[in-house]
Length: 249
Image (tube, rainbow, N blue to C red):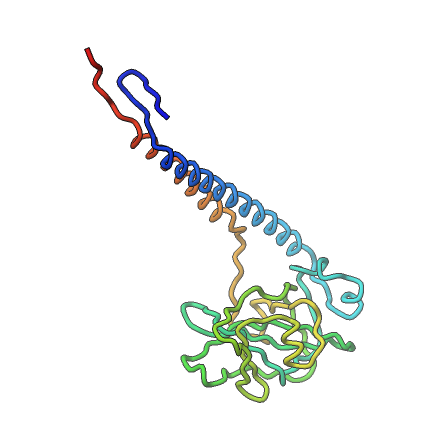
């Protein structure tokens, strides 16, 4: 392929053109994918804010029986019952303020009910010794807690095949957490969602304050970068394939 404009000749090689086209399409596609991710984050954040603005739900057997998980996700809830302290689950590989630690999950039986929900009570440090069990809060009797309803966490790195370790008679450490697996470990039938204690709760541990940003700006920044790569690639392609040739008399 050759094109001539005055003394300028555009003469790229076929392989160069094909590679440029391939990467140009890839960069543009990645840019639009990031825009789509930004829109998803925007939509999720809007959903989150609408749920957070609603009044807190008193989580009891009647609410659980009539409301599905979709109706409860991200809703503020209040609950009365007791922690089953003989079953403590530590989700491994959780970092807070640059320190290694765990998220502590404890089953919570609702008052006057057989319904049991798994509660994320916050973060505790390993104290730089993974062989020792962390000191955990023990609560007795009926208490009231509040927080938000979430789906089971999508966190946890499987660093070993045997990712379930018994640290003591009451404490189990896992590298990945699913409700089904915790049910097997504790032999307790759990509700199909998790409650995360509010930062103000006195029945938990260190809690990360949740960001109120949607996170869409991060994806838009990535999108602009990919589009910039595409434009730079096109410019480089044109520059290296255009030559100026002196005319003949």
